[in-house]
Length: 219
Image (cartoon, rainbow, N blue to C red):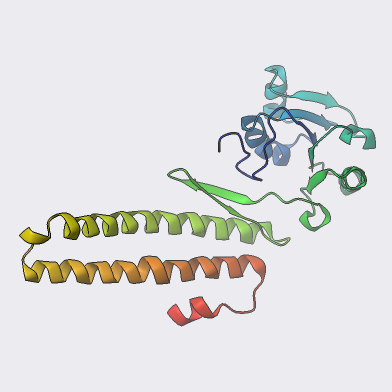
């Protein structure tokens, strides 16, 4: 999946992307877009050092001027990340009129796309999209990554014990077999019941659910 952006799951290889704004918020989104092979065009009144460095190296184009409605022409995706709400709204409206997906960094509810908070553990990327509460999304994302770190070794241990029972059944004495089977039941309970309940809880946090019976039962 290296050709997809880790944040939005879009294939942007060779496709024009507009970034309105070149501050620290915009800079955080650039690496994923460049990694995806996007044809990235940045328009802003001023640029942070990272953006200037990328532009100097030819990774993206940078124009230091006010963003215009016509800048969205030909773009397949846009991010409005200026420090001017009116400019962001103008970009979002221009994109809406042309059927272009647009993320508004200042007001996620006013855009047609959202940037999830993401985390990665052993090749697994976890993304959490919050409803206008980015800090809560980040906390839920961090919890989901921590949960993956817990789950992975438990699943590996369960597989190892299952293989042991299958491959060396004749050599395992009855008492040891009982201990292994008991451990497997405990791992099964945690991996297939408790951990999914925790994931359900994290989704409920992010989606403003009033309750989450699956998690409450386990809690």
